[in-house]
Structures are given as structure tokens and as C-alpha cells.
Amino acid sequence: MEIRNCKVCGNSNGNKLYAVKEMQLGMRETFTYMECGNCGCMQLMDIPADLGKYYPNEGYYSFNRGLTLQKPGLLRRIKTSYLLQGKNALVGGLLSVGYKVPDYYSWMKIPGIKYDDAILDIGTGNGSLLSTLFSLGFTNLTGIDPFIDKDMQVGSINIYKKSIFETEGQYDYLMLHHAFEHMDEPLKVLQQLYKLVKKGKYVLIRTPVMGMYSWKKYGTNWMDLDAPRHIIIHSLKSMQLLAAQAGYELRKTVFDGNYMSLIGSDQYAKDIALPDPNSYMVNKPASGYNKEDVEKFKSITIQNNKEQQADQAAFYLFKP
Image 1 (tube, rainbow, N blue to C red):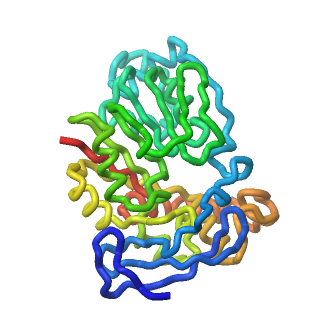
Image 2 (cartoon, one colour):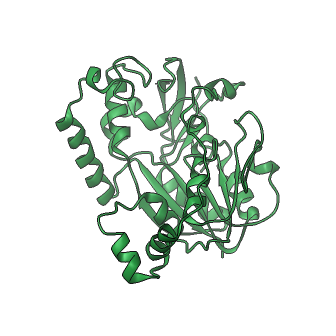
């Protein structure tokens, strides 16, 4: 296959081709990816005509989570207002003793999101994150996903089967939790997001990061390559280039790698697909990974996040 220009920076020098297997559904089809010699991103060379078959509603993880709405009670509202805004310090502090704060608190806290802000979750699946935010007290919640079967409404949450280019209006906060890597033409995507977010507000993009520890150790067996669903796996450099070209200020980058990605990558290196009978995600005892192995993966992940070498990160893009 002929090497092409990078979709992000246009570079053609030093680009390399790799064969990557589909392993999340266990199809084991092979796809060709290209690593850019300049900006370092990894991109799928030929996008399948029917991507939908790689997002089966009955088998794909983001469509399989139950969706329920639970209004926040008084104690939860107090704890949430303390963790997000520092309010109700005495009671909120007591309620938070020993509480392992989930990551979604930081997603709301860092950009200073208010309870009535208009929030759009892009690539929402069945909206499980939106239901969690509802339980914290957020009220103006919308989701979109082009791969769901149909529009859904759960209480006050509206979820639409559509892409960002079919979406109108403006929002106080846009979230893409592992959705950006599923999109082609990333500059056009960021430009459309720029139209959808209000001035002085943020776009959060959580995505795999190319060229870090997991790629160096596992190569094409790195789980987050996720062929062919991940069309472009961005590097730190490609994210910085795109953000600047689209008019954003990249205000903050938080590395949030997950140890399960390391386990998955280690499995793939042994030709164990995600749904295989001896997969850790299917049958832990049969996988061969013991408690000590898992703790080692967790320790490596903590260190990688600390040293900014993890394979996933959250990028906070600010619209001036």
C-alpha cells in the first residue's frame, strides 16, 4: 500500500505502515495504519464502507450499560457541592471522608461547570454518563451518537442519533469521552465543535495518546489502536497542532490511563482477543493473570500518569 500524506499535518516524510488486527470483537481482520513521521499520530489508511458492523448495539461496550435516572438526595447534593465547588465544607468534608472521588468530578470541576449549564456529550452511547451527571445535580443534559439505533429520551435527558455536523445550537460544555479518535477529518471536527461551544467555555476531549509507554512496549498489539473503530489516534503534538489551527487554547492536559488497557494489550500480544474464553475481561481465573499481575499493571499505570507517559489523556480546549 502506498504511503500517503498525514491528515493532520500533511507530512509525507518518514511515515510508516503497520498491520493492526481487530481484537475487541474478536474478528481478527487486519487493517493498515500509518504513523506520521512528523506529528506522530496514527491513522487508518482505508476506512471501511460499513463501519456500523464494528459497532453492534448488542455487543459494543458503550451500548450495553443500563440507563437509570436517580435524583440527588440532600446528602449527595451537599457532598457534590463540596467536591465540585468547595461549598458546605464541614458537612461535605465529613461525607467525603474515605470516598474515592470518581474521575467525572474532575471533568466538571476543572472547567467550572455549573449545575444548569447546557452540556452536550458527543458519542454518548446509551447516555450512561449523562445519567450519572443527572444524579449529581446537573439538569441540562443532551447526548448524540450516530451509531445508536434511534433517538431516546430518559426523563429530562435527550439522546439523538446524529453526528456533530447534524447538531445545531450552542452549549456551555462539550464532552468527547473516547469519541474523537473515532472521527475522520479532525480539523473539521474541531471547527464544528468550535461553532457549538459558547465563547469562554470548554471542549473536553478524552482520547488515547499515540507514542507513549503502551505503544513503545506493545506496538501494534496496543489495545487502544482498536482497529478499525479508531480512525486517528492522536499524539500530543497532533492535538496541539489541531487545537491551535481550530482557534482553541489548550489550557490543560491530564493523563488518565487505565490499567485495563495494559492488560488488554498484554492479552493481544498473546493473541487473546477481548471476548475470548480465556480473556481477563471474560473469565479472570482462566486468564492466567493473578492479583500480583494486576497490581503491577495498576502500579505501572499510576507511574505513567504521573510521568505523563500514559496512553490516554484529557485535553481541555478553551474557546476565547
